[in-house]
Length: 505
Image (cartoon, rainbow, N blue to C red; front, top):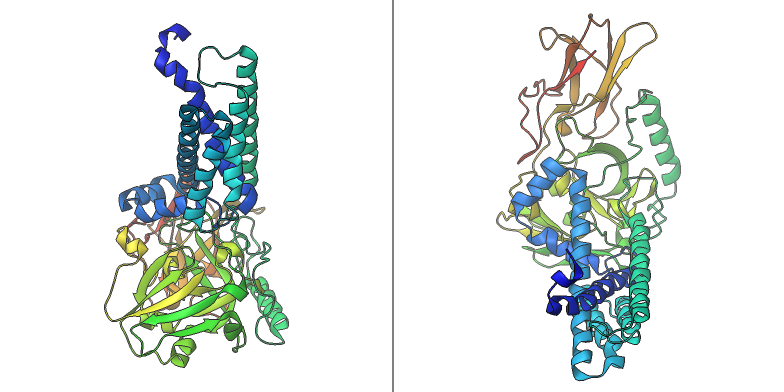
């Protein structure tokens, strides 16, 4: 298409559109520069709104089809929407200045509404100045370059405008790349500067180190197989930008169908007798042989003790609410068996895993192990939590599963298979392996169980392979003697179950 083919009216507006888009990008970059990857970053509330209001069918598609890419696309969508919103406001401010003939005020008229919008979205007016300054700077530079959007602007002025726009766009890209470091890492060993440094008693470090050392001794040392205590714990959340709450600013409220509301601050929790327990978490959206099942040593207090201290009567359900707006409902009976934890593998709970405190509900799907928990609303009647509103049903006990993660050749010519098995509080009594597509079965060797109400076990099995390609199948038997179902149920809506099979040559 030639330049003359573009209508003059459209051509005259293009420079203004470019400036508005650049101002939107600079505003987002400025917000990140001021707030970092925290809830005060303008993208955070937009991302939260997407998670809250997007129809369940789209979330289910993202989980089942896109997997981890879905979360990245959600954050990208929130970033683009934020740039569009702020760019539109900046463009309107610039247009008003042009129309009123006060072009020198174009920058402020663009920056002030951007600042106001970000302050309203985040509730942090001081940090919102970063976005306002970013928009002001871009529009101000464009204004100084002359009458952007007219046909008689000098070529040199155009180059200055384009150069300024390109520079700010580059700064926005750098800000975005820097912001990526604030994303979820999934590591339980990452720094947690906003978490507590104490555990509530004097010998915690020694006791924790001993427990972790014993777990390491029980683990099979096989390449590609996570030890009994996971080295990289999975991270799944509805929010891309995680809360950042200091222990001194955190509290847990018990509200709802109670005689009187109760509140516990962080010191109230850590001064209680600490409980340490190994527990495995499994994501309800995990694929059959996926890798969103992990184990850690958690330190905290029994929620049942908190409910007793608050004199909470017997009720049907609880709605657990979090700092990021997440909420999930499940039976009070399960809550009484839960832990409120503030340390993970002996270290302060990392931000990505719910710092300063989260729930761990042994044997139940991961969606009710609410991170960043700040309220327990006791209910008289059942209600729908976030995931139930989206069509999922993952508040109950987990399904039994045996995972196949390792297929390797041994030095003696045999093949070795290995994986994990998990059945919640029912435990694992056996894992059976077939090397002929399910015609015959042999029992695998299990690792010793960790002390805990709901923990996985490793398994391994070596065999003489038949000639050529063959199908291996694995299945688990829980501690009650029940063989897991054979059919692959798929993750939706109540979690994946089924025998894992793989073609091996």
